[in-house]
Length: 207
Ligand SMILES: Cc1cc2nc3c(=O)[nH]c(=O)nc-3n(C[C@H](O)[C@H](O)[C@H](O)COP(=O)(O)O)c2cc1C
Image 1 (cartoon, helix red, strand yellow):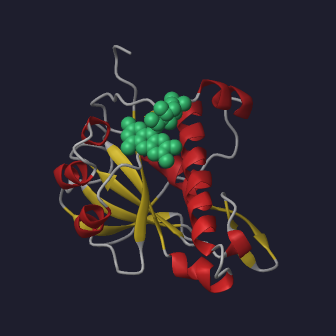
Image 2 (image 1 turned 120 degrees about the horizontal axis):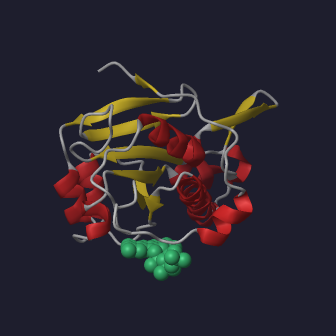
């Protein structure tokens, strides 16, 4: 399938970082309204997008031990979850700032089941899945590589939550899921391990 070009990310906003930090909370309810592609683009860029070039290396919006960049961000879209995306699974391509379709057709029920049936996944129009190729980091840091990869997932997740806060979107970190089930449903290659699920969406009308 042809890659989906994403709207350029914004590098300024109306909410200060201080305000976003002060008001952020895990918000587990969502409207049925689809997400806008611009929101999806901003969240994926915040998770793993490119920020600047240093010594010829394309650096990302989140720090990475030795700039090894082990993380890949996927986007699971529920039926009618995003205005311009079919239901399914997409992989975010940071250098091109675009989405590559990975699985066509909804896997939403299966992802929810893999997340132990949590409503926060079932009710979300879209979920960012952070997965890691830990060998990239372990090769450079045999003793601390695993630890560093987990730290990086936290950096990426917090960026997503703060951007959600600044754009008046709801989001929640989800770490309780079956590793095997998520890997199977997403058809992850062996080198990738899912670390974090980040369901996101518009706030419900009655919040
Ligand atoms: C590593 C991690 C895993 C989490 N997993 C889940 C989860 O599976 N389901 C869920 O509803 N919340 C999950 N949470 C959210 C926590 O419950 C929440 O952050 C905590 O209650 C503090 O509330 P706050 O985020 O609103 O400040 C997780 C948070 C972290 C940091």
